[in-house]
Image (cartoon, rainbow, N blue to C red; front, top):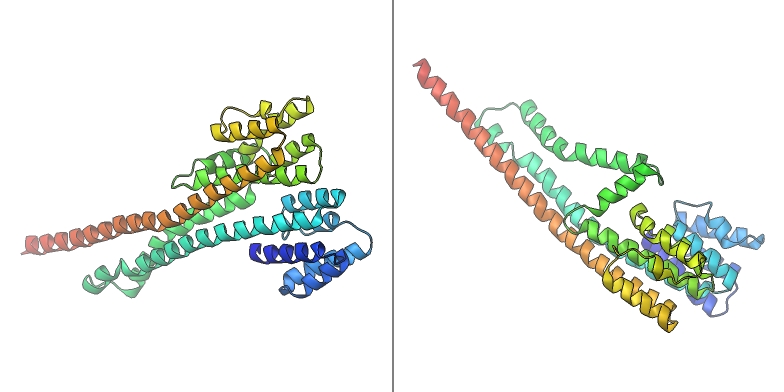
Length: 326
C-alpha cells in the first residue's frame, strides 16, 4: 500500500507541476495503478469532476488514505500547493514503506525459525523415545502455541482498543516502553510526524495555531500527542509554540525549534527536524529488525535445552525403574 501511494503521489506531483489539469492527472495516474488503487483514484477523479474537493472524497476511503494525508491535501487545496504536498506525501509513504520492509524481514525470519524449531525440537524424543506420531504432533502444537497465543492476544488488543480514550493512551504508553529499540523508534517516528505535518501546513499558509493543533493530532501516539497539546494552547495565547513544549522533549529538539522561531525560519527548521527524527526512527526500526531474530534464537536455545534435559531425565528415570524392578 505504502509503495503504491508513494508512486501515485509522486506521479501526481510531477503532472500537476507540469501544468496538467487535476482531473486529467488523476485519470492518468489512476489508470496505471493496481486494481484496488485504480478504483480509489478513479473515484477521486469522478468526484473532482463533480466539483468536490479531493479531501472530501479521500475521507470516504479511510483504509487507503491516512488522516494525515487528508489533512495535508485539505490544506493544500486551500492554499493552491497541491504539487508540493503530493511530493512530500510521496516521500513520506516511501519512507513508511522502507520501515515496513525492514520490520517484515525481521518478522519473517523469526517466524521461520519458530516453525523450524517447533518441528525439530521433539524429533529426538520421537525417534529415540518411541513416541507415536500423535504425541509428536501434540508437542509441535504446544511449542507453536507458546508464540501464537501471545501474538493473537496482542493482535486482538490492537484491533479492539479504541483509537481514543484511556485504553488507547495506556496502550500507546506501553508501546513507547517496548525494548529492543522499538519503543524509541515509535517515539522518534511520532516526533517526525509532528514536525513533518507542521512543516507542510505552515508552508501551505495555514495559521500557526491550526498547524500546532493538527500536527499534534497526527503523531500517531496518544502520549506524544498529549506532550504537544500545550504548544497549541501557547500559540492561541499569542506566545511562541515552543513555550508550550514540555521539558520531556529532547533538548536538541527544543533548541532547534526555538532557533527557528527566533530567526523566522520555522518552516525550514521543522523540515530539518522531521528529516532528522525520521532517519533516527528508520535506524532504530532496522536495529529492532536485526535484534528480533537474535531474541528468537535465544528463546529457541532455551527451548532446545529444556527438551534435551526433559528427554534425558525421562530416559534416565526409565532406566532407574528398569533396574529397580530387577
